[in-house]
Length: 440
Ligand SMILES: NC(=O)c1ccc[n+]([C@@H]2O[C@H](COP(=O)([O-])OP(=O)(O)OC[C@H]3O[C@@H](n4cnc5c(N)ncnc54)[C@H](O)[C@@H]3O)[C@@H](O)[C@H]2O)c1
Image 1: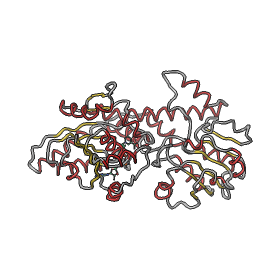
Image 2 (image 1 turned 135 degrees about the vertical axis):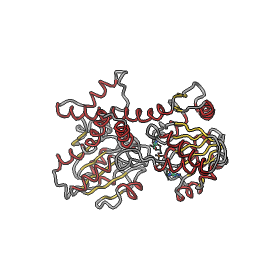
Image 3 (image 1 turned 180 degrees about the vertical axis):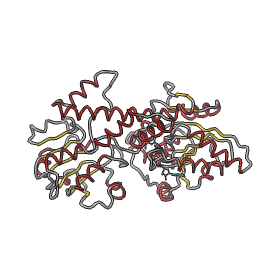
């Protein structure tokens, strides 16, 4: 099939690459000329395991193209995906300006029947707005071209995006026409050969499913962080409690690690957007509001432990930070807890030395840009040279089994703050460390 993906970020580029991997002819379009220029030179602008090889292979096979002009990009397409950003607007609701700008351009330039698919995470009712926007432009052109609008929310996880997309747990399709369902099924069938994972529903339910999924996952995280904070007060160990409750199949082990809170491009904005959507329809979403509040406070719990140990004024202290990305496997730093922890420590006069396997450029160029007293180094041990403590914020595999003698040699004092709850899975007290973690 001829597919066009508009927006070539984490979701658009991965989706485009995976559709092309299945033999479709895919055009990825983006408004950012630098991004498209880079992609045309074979430079992949984001880090995602397996993405580079897949893109380069399919470009070579001529299954994957990159374009800057939307009209040109959609001229041969049967299905057009909208995968542009839906960032948090000033009032916390999802900002739809990019989605609607794309819809307008589609209406202005489409030359044949189309299935237009919202893959971006969008509030309930957005498909109707997309449809109306396209129709308005067609009417202005006196065109009677037919099109369908479909909701196909994306559930991939950064860091495992390719495998999630190639072997999805489910593909949710919200549509109101048989033709659209049929086309979407044809496109996705190769991704689940052994058994059908296609979940068909109405458009509004599909739009809501994405928010409900992210809100559920965020709730698990905030729930466990709250339990961890109570554990600390009552003298229990959140890690033992985690194992104790996770063994119940109704609860399960995933997403119940206490830590520095959730970040990333999705949970914070989607949780916030869902409360706004509810409010718009006259409902006060109390639980989801609390999930966000717990998370906001949780980002600073590790900084509070540092203050308790080293004092309110951290002038003269240096902290070695392992991990900047909001989670391992990605260079994405959107809403990463590391941003909040580092800013808090720097505000109190501390110096920071930090290492992350992938996210240093993002930190330098965007999220920690202009903040003085941060030194970026090339290895996890260099970070610790003359530092007062090691602070672990992202659970990259290379931090899991470090050389403890080396850590002790480098640090001024053998103090470790583990923001990922016993990620360094050793009995650190017995190794001569002062060890602080969340939930104990
Ligand atoms: N990142 C994730 O893990 C993830 C997972 C599931 C769903 N989502 C959702 O998918 C959507 C995209 O997220 P992302 O992380 O890929 O965002 P991103 O910021 O990485 O990429 C968005 C891209 O859209 C481009 N763009 C903006 N306006 C455009 C326009 N008018 N025409 C063409 N391109 C345009 C931007 O230049 C950018 O390259 C969001 O709604 C997000 O919530 C993201």
